Amino acid sequence: MNEIDTIPVYSKVYKGHRIRVTYDEFPTDPQLDENMDDPSILLVSHHQKYGENHDLPTHDAVRAYAAQHCYVIYNVLLHEHSSLAYSLHAYDDRWMPGQFGYLLVKLKSIDACATHTEKLVKLATAWLQTYQAWSNGDVYQYAIYHIIDCEHCKHSHDKLVDSLCGIYGAEEALAQAKAYVDELAKETT
Image 1 (spheres, rainbow, N blue to C red):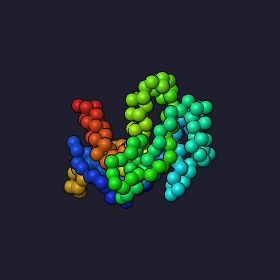
Image 2 (image 1 turned 90 degrees about the vertical axis):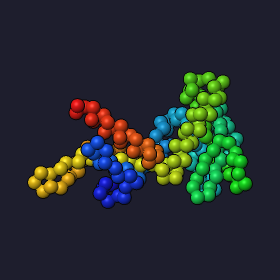
Image 3 (image 1 turned 90 degrees about the horizontal axis):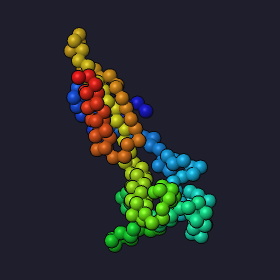
Image 4 (image 1 turned 135 degrees about the vertical axis):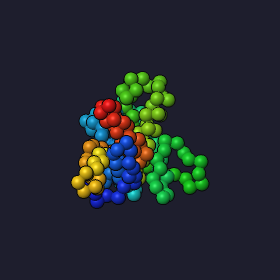
């Protein structure tokens, strides 16, 4: 992707650097970030509109797979309105969410102890929030340019210093870019 051709969400000058935050046009599905040979979290979709993504067509098949591979099962609800909102719990909303599928969390993800329910729920909720951000296109990238003032032509030019993609949330992308520039400033002093 060409940085020049993308419209920035943020374009800020910070400590002698220009930071451009843009949409990540090719974000990686969070499910693909998992080790698919032995994933710690597995989302099983049974949604008519979004399709099935696994060979587990029924609730009984999901339960059997989860028991065989040491997963805890959570129902995933989907509230689809102007964006997609996923939840492990029912919303207090007159527009009731529908069943999307199941989120399976491997017990080894929390030190192999089934009594850590609170930790499991936090892990599952955090993963689902990441998936929701990805589903809604809330994934960004940043590019940091060093601003160079040309003595000859009296214009400033930008020289690419660093870039990073796959960041969830525009504010988080901006914060990470600023932190990188802060580190650069420490190195030069």
